[in-house]
Length: 383
Image (cartoon, helix red, strand yellow):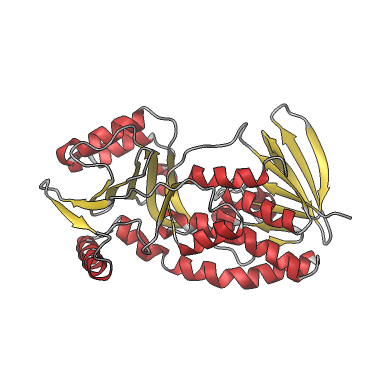
């Protein structure tokens, strides 16, 4: 009998898992809270691990690539001067700059017509056992059904409904970095900068970074530190950012960028939380992606590990010959060291995005200069 998996969340992790399970002969069903697919989203720099995973999933070649041909990054100082710094998107000599929506669009082409997808549907209750999980689903119309699945995968983000229903409240697994972020697409280039230019305007406890993209508006990323992220996340982002950056509006850059925030509904405004759990599975329920580990935007690995996780689950099911319980144990044993390694560096990387002291601000500027100099030496034709 064909084994069935319910995947909660039509994001990168969820669709990656669906493709991987479909290859192993499973019948995945994806449910998504939203009434339709999301599009657009913020900048993502896809490193080698992410590119390899996308290739293994069969979506790398069809994924839109948006790395500008002539890309330069600038550190904008308080006096209005600019200094060239290392390209923040280039972890290797062959980076891929994409939008989150570009990855999701490519993955969608891998599941469309092959996997059942139900929009406007959420889990209400999940009762897990040794061989199956009973899930009560509720649609936007209010209709409820109870269905049995051999595996339930919670790929529904950092504030996962599946995690809350099966494992416990968010607070038990959240590890706050004491920072907030707001990411959104710009409607127009930043005045005074060329196509392909990125910039970072940084001070202690607050930064604005603009990531350039080919063929699409740049992504603006505000980040700042706060003692109470929970309270901060309930505030209006536009009003909050205007107050926090009021004396850092160098050459009017912040004001013009915030004008674009005021004109869009396509933004992410949230506190930055890592998720740490002793186990990612319980009975026949498995958490995947941000629901399970959330490496945060600062890591630069969130989307990549989402795809890697889906592939690892498929490989584990294959190697365990359909023994789901053994496969879930093998999945954790395989992936947890990789996730733990990257979680260790999240706090450090957060200092590069939003330095907490003047010393870390100075150290960040020195590091970018060193990286730029080393890149010019190693790749003289690429700068």
